[in-house]
Length: 436
Image (cartoon, rainbow, N blue to C red):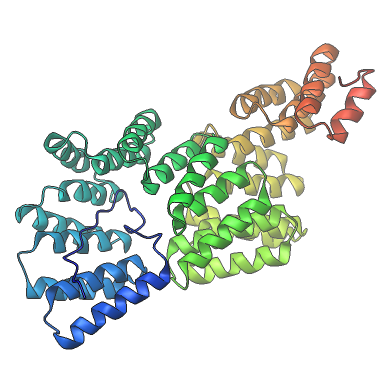
């Protein structure tokens, strides 16, 4: 039987483990082989290292760390082992330990660890140190795809999306089969309100790596943004299945996101079960409290809904979505001024928050302020030029102002985007118009 040497894997901004798409059965066979070698010789450092790599690919991070640590004890000057243990620490969000191991790997002569250490610095919001390491990595190798991908991640976390997208393009050109780069670029598209482009990249990511949890999660959010909730639920469910029984914050977020999709689909019992699960996993999940509050509101349990919204904002006072959600409950309760105040806060936090912009327009219109409503609808239309509701509501506001020609134009646009939009059709017919 042929022995394999020490395996080196690199994480590009929290990449799915190298060869993560490998069939589980193949990994199990490899694990049995390394177990056999270790039964024969517990001090076999190659088997210890290789088994750690397999544990990593299987998502068994504690076991991976244990085996890498033993491999280091047996061979304390092997740079690659420190690099690989650091990669596991990134996955477990133990960033200081990751930095220490990457630094030791660099001391022992492995220059590739600069890129990994930069990822650890980035994920700990230490951007100056991250960019310094990335400059060093790219000085050594200007075509280091991992370094370019990690620089893209750093730019994205700083919301410098033009630079992030440019770097992802370069990284993908250098490594066209790296799922992580497509996942990262897809996330950047999503965060810049371009869900169709996001879905295209994230679909490529999961085709290259069917176990890429983050790609399924982000694609689910992109589908939800497009109100394709069944597809969103399917992706969230896949992410949950791949995550298994891990009780980590990110896992709680996936349950909360699926809960939101269930709410929008009218499956309230399933939604509440997901929100409860998310809160059980992470009692500090503002996303879960906000979503559960919206679900209670949909069930007309407004007091419970408002209590959950208040809790969400207490937990994360900088979350624009929570203010938007609470505003809707307050509006239903007849507290329009408080609702407007919450929407103002949401837009202060995120001026590109489409729903907050649209909802504020709706409330202004309901209070007889069509000028202010139209101003919000104009901004909403810039954010989503293919959203039929924006044009419908702006058309109604134009009608309120007596601007019949503008009203007809907007209502026709709404019907062009959504031919079965019955409210827009009735409104247009009331103006004596007809959709072409």
